[in-house]
Length: 213
Image (tube, rainbow, N blue to C red; front, side):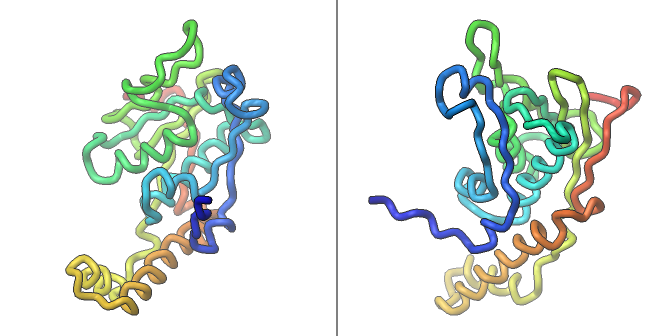
């Protein structure tokens, strides 16, 4: 039997999000089409837990909460624009997390069935927008800009030094374990200490006069 992933304890403290996916409902993939995602799902997909992945996960949750309020968000019913190129910086990594949760996909995504449930071309890069991300409901046209300030939890000098030693393959196991603890402490702080800080995770409505790329 495969052993369950042993995530850091704080993963379970990060709020999860439920979405209804009409395509999953149509195909009987999950009862009622309701899919729940947590931070561990984003980590499992990317293969690592870091401020970049954490910010993308929580920013998406915040954006969907703002767009849907008391409604359950609809997976596949959201268009996402990314200001940066897919190959530059962390844009591609964060977009992959956003895609996991929202279902929005680039040109390589699902083409749909019978003219419905298309996911391709709902995720676009190089958008001319005044924020890193723009989330839009396809049914209502309501949209928000989203931005996360990951530098609020900067890397400590000890963590930075240990990272260098780990990458150079000169760190012993005690140093490696200390680095892991410090690294995940940064991620934990971003998600749990600053998750409700609207200046760190900034969501603001898009108005008709705002430029769209």
